[in-house]
Image (cartoon, rainbow, N blue to C red):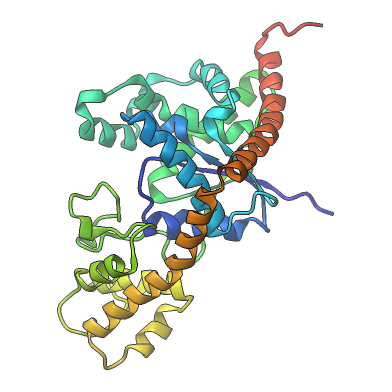
Amino acid sequence: MEEKRKLFSAVQPSGAVTIGNYIGAIKNFVALQDEFDCIYAVADLHAITVRQEPAALRKNTLELMALFIACGIDPEKCVLFVQSHVPAHCELTWVLNTITYPGELSRMTQFKDKSAKHAENVNMGLMDYPVLMASDILLYQAAAVPVGADQKQHLELTRDLAIRFNNRYSDTFTVPEPYIMKGSGAKIMSLADPSRKMSKSDDNPNGFITMSDDRDTVIRKCKRAVTDSGNEVRLSEDKPGVSNLIAIYGAFTGKSAQETEKQFEGKGYGDFKLAVGEAVADALAPIQAEKARLLKDKGYLNEVMKRGEETASRIARKTLSKVYRKVGFYQGE
C-alpha cells in the first residue's frame, strides 16, 4: 500500500476560536485525515509571542484540544499533541536560526503588523516566530502544509530554509508544498466589515461568531451582519456582505452559491440572514455539546495529549538527531 504523505498544521490556543478559523482550518483538518498522514498541534509556544495570562493559556490549551476532537479530528487517525510537550521544536529552531538572516525576518508582513499592534512588546519571539514555524513543519518531514493567505510568506521561508540546509549539509529535510484549501469559505470576512478578515480581536463583537457562541447570539450577530444595497441574494464582487454570508451558509449546509441563490430567489435579506444564523447555530450545537462532555473527562484529554506527545517526539527526535549529526554535534560513537 502506498504510504500517505505527511501533512502538518497547528492552531494557537489564544482564546476564542471563530467560525472563520473553523471553516478555513479545523473543518478542513477533519477532511484531510483520510487523505494524508496528519500531524496537528496546539501551538502554545507560538502563543506566548504576545503576552498571555498563564492560567488562561492552560485553560485555552485544554479547550482547543477538546474542540479539535469535538469537531471530528480523530486521535486514532492522526497525531494530536501540544507543541511545548515536544522540546525538539525549540532545539531545531536554534539550529535553523544560524542559517536565517535578520533581513528575512524583519521583512515578514505579520511581524510588521504584530509589532504595530503590540508596540509595547516587540520581542525576539515575535520576530523569530517564522523560524519556529519552519521547525514545526520540517521536524515531521511534512510534504504538505495547509495555508491561508496570511501564512504563505512563512511557508516560503520554511521552504527556503529547508533548501538552504539541504544544500549546505546534504539532503535532510523534505521541502514542503502549500496545500490550498478546497472549496469556498477558506477566508471568512467580518460580519461588520466584509472588507476585513473575521477576527476575534475585532473591536466590534458583532463582527465575528465564536465556536462557543450560543444560539441566540449567533442568530443576533447574523441578523446584524452588514449587507449591501438592494435585496437580492447573489454572489458578486459588488456585494461583499452578501457574498460573505453565502460562503458561511455554504460552509455549514454544504450548498453551493448557485443553490443558495436559487433557494432565496425573490426573498429579502432578512429571511436569508435568519437562515444563515440558524444554519450556523444548528451546526455548532453538537460540537459545543461534545466539547463540554470532553472537558469533563480530563483523564481522556490528558491521555490523548500524552499519546500524541510520544508519537510526535519519536518522529521529531529522528529528524533532530539527523540534523545534529549533519551540523557536527558529537553524539557518542
